[in-house]
Length: 479
Image (cartoon, rainbow, N blue to C red; front, side, top):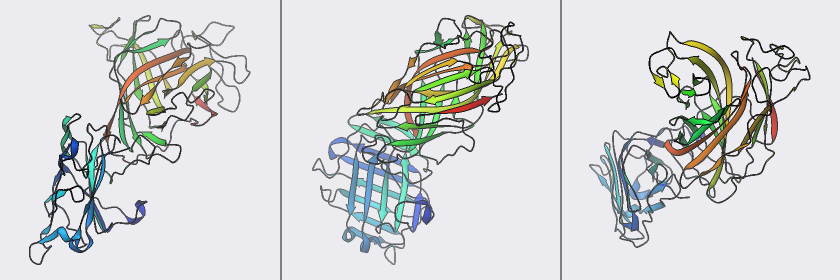
């Protein structure tokens, strides 16, 4: 994988890095980044307030590392020979340093400046082989400027505003300072650490109870803070931050004429297997009551009597991961599993207007009537998903509503294509409801685009939903 990172510094404590400790890592903003194909040009520019290097570049030399975090656009390290550095000011180095190179394959950086308010590099070799950039970039861009063999590093990262990104040129500007110095992903793992945003596009569908499937509106997002891959299995742990990690558009259930909202209630967690070797099939077994000490959810509204309006929405859910095959194994394909806790509200919209097949304006207002609301945990996978109901605890009560008890048909996702950055996530489950037809089953299929939208922030989730990422079963009690 190749990537373009313009790394120009942050202060990091010695124990925070797996690489050798640096005297002064500085994370700074990026003003401009340009990379042209064919060795024509790499240009980086940063403006701000910088600390000059402790090391003497004219004695130690340095390197400039330019790479694409998306692993496709280039991965170059340019050697900065000590003899080509000259000090600015009096004594030399008091006002910074200037590097003047030959512009050849061996010494491609013609100009490099390190000053208290400016860092600039211009490198090109006219196709001689020293500058090997292959835009477009699929990830963030940046550079690591390392002076004195790790004595001083300057680190920045280009997101920012993308002016152009095609097979001839990538140009980005006005990037904020990163949270940490970015680094190249481990060899063989086609996904870099960073913040990735999955955005649902048109073509999604949702099926609930025994109603016909209906289109699900586009625009929902899942933001994941994706850690660097573990080797050799290329597993990335991810966190969905709260708030702001999950959004879903309000939608209308045509068969009922009711409007529904789904709102994140806590942080979520996930995994991405960026070489697709994991089995992330999900099967959810639901029980409307649990008389055992496992969940201690009493029977309410179960047969032989008819379901009672207002019966509680509690459920026990046994979630099993695995049992299928590694459906995304293959070059450039990744498998994804992520779980998010949410609160679902269904209402009759009494405001004026039309919202799809529902009346009203599509938002919950004071004059609207709540039909039901309950907590859920949504498990999205690019693998396979299915859910059903059964009497897990043996108390004679498994479902008190419309089901269907065997769930919807098995639904299949589509792998994350790490080149095109597209994926189809699916989810299936059961839910308890205080409104008729009470307990139900759902399945949803959501096509998505995926984009690298920021640097890895090291997010954590203190109370994640229970989920096994390897073959196994966990129990959730949803009172």
